[in-house]
Amino acid sequence: MVLLHGLWRSFWAMDGLASALNDEGFETLNIPYASFRKTLDEIVDDVADAIGSSPRRTHFVTHSMGGIVLRCLARRHPDLVTGKIVMLAPPNQGSEIIDWLEDSPLSRWALGPGGMSLSTDKVRDNVPGFSDQHDVSVIMGRSSSVPFFRSLFQGENDGIVTAGGGKVAGMRRMEIVDGDHTFLMNQPVVRKRVINLLGTQGSGEREAQSGI
Image (cartoon, rainbow, N blue to C red; front, side, top):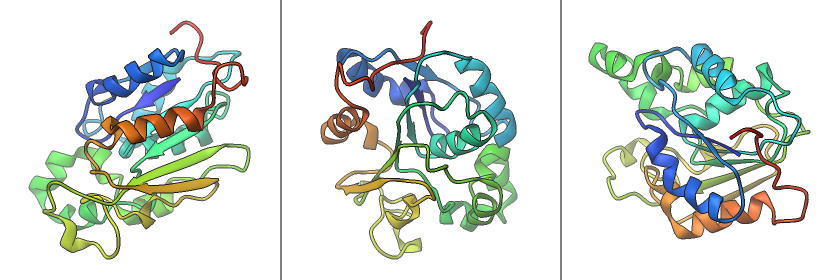
């Protein structure tokens, strides 16, 4: 089981979810990556190196930018993405916030090459969808405790990403819950749903990355 955090975050952001998955019998690899210091291609290479090869099925749970990283990983290293996928609040259509900030030199510096790769144009043009061989679930939020950017959006959103912006080619199911973008992975209802989507012990769906 591999967990990938979002922009400007660290593996600590996914640590609570990783612990919940451990309690359910999953082995987890919670990968930190340089979300804003490196290009998306460099990030994908780093993540691929951290995962390594395994003869067993490897599931993925991602938050926000981590979902974009996984989409690129699945195309470039399909041998590593062999299990179920649950994406939490992914900007699968790109980020309107990045579009709004990209003309500011200060914002470009703060976001770095990784953050700038999340603009709507760059995601549309450069980030592949999933194949029909992947079992992809998407969970989006529709509430926000810090609604600073909500005026940029139309329709349901979590203050960072629109609910409809979570759609991606190849996904099998999508759910919308009352949750904030930043802490969606920490909500009990979301953790429980992630575990349910990944399967139950003995179903043959809980095989995890070996050596973790």
